[in-house]
Image 1 (tube, rainbow, N blue to C red):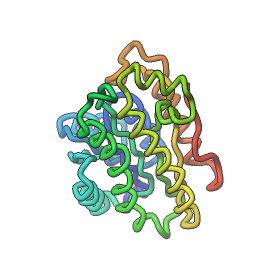
Image 2: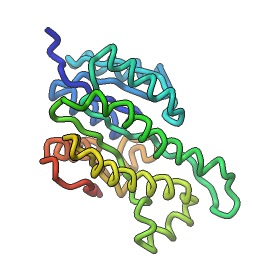
Image 3: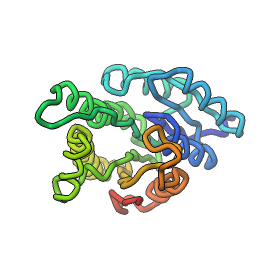
Image 4: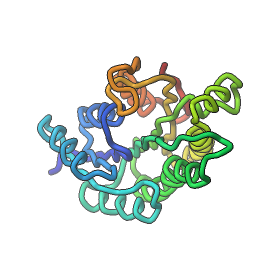
Length: 236
């Protein structure tokens, strides 16, 4: 009998938080499906997890393409079993001045942060119904709070991060909405808002001040919290 009865999808795999979350959940007996656009990166990540005793497989997909996302989730379920946890963590790399940026820039962020999350959610929920301990976990960012904080709004403009701020704000709204929609189905939805650079990530590298292992622990605590627990926590 397969010992890995629970399955986590890591959507947006790379160095930093997603790698730490994959290792954390694998250590708790989850089979791991790694999703990103680069098969070579996925193969390395899956091999590392396998060498540590986990069951892992990589699937190349563009999270901005909803139908591709749904298709890859179906493939994961066929290979590993119904998804127990969806961890959504695509990087935001679309930057530019708010008055001169191409509309495609903000569209790209919305596709990765919002459309992809919704497509993945729609794909995993049918398999989650009837399972126990299912969750959708999302990595949020401080720029999502720009609408509530003038200092952050100024920072977003100064950094050229208005597209990132808009995408993350829309994602945060979707997270809270999904939490209400899926709670009656017994599915936990929650986010960790990361407010600084993550050590070892592509964006921050060695200059990061937030340990990915600490963020992974935050996600594990959210996962194991009661169904009516907090929807959002902050890691700074």
